[in-house]
Length: 291
Image (cartoon, rainbow, N blue to C red; front, side, top):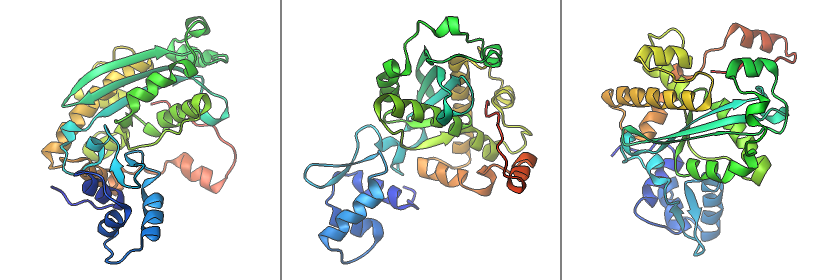
């Protein structure tokens, strides 16, 4: 079993065998010999309450939330981790500034295969700019009679629960899904997430560009419908499986090991010329995040 390198991973490993009281858990996790109960409780809340994989039981003990253990326990093989590969189509790029989801797809991956795929058009309750319709082929006529995100939020949340949120340029999809869940049900999106762009930077260093088109072309994966949520999610899921196989061949066999690999300098985005210009001249700018 690989040795956990973060406090949360250490806590997950200790709780894999069952619930523990705060004193025992924090003594083991923080490696302190003496700890008062009230201090241990404050430490546990500060460390674990922001992570959805942990739950505080009525007894005061802490435990792993059912369904999330596979994503965080160091000894679990990457093949057994459950991934929710998500793609959204939207009315624009500004999730917190009025843009909304028009289509969402979630392809769940586990055990080296795509388990199932959920796809749904969504009424964004606002107009769709013509350039977005030209890109996605999603028009107002297609979505006006579809459910709103509030209607589909319970299904989306259920499909994401217990899975690593995964997407190509994950920050974009995470931001939109998070905004929609909070807007509709006051629910904060949290938990482990994985960006397949970052995976490609580390695992496919010879590939000049890491867009979904370039990554899928590299693997010979066909995208059934580009810039449609289901087509992109399924293609990303196939790319994820190929890159997980590469990672395993290189000795990366657990979720914490993959996190460590992707946190290396190679996994971090390099500043572009526009990034450098924005730092020098901090003026308002729009940015195209479409993968």
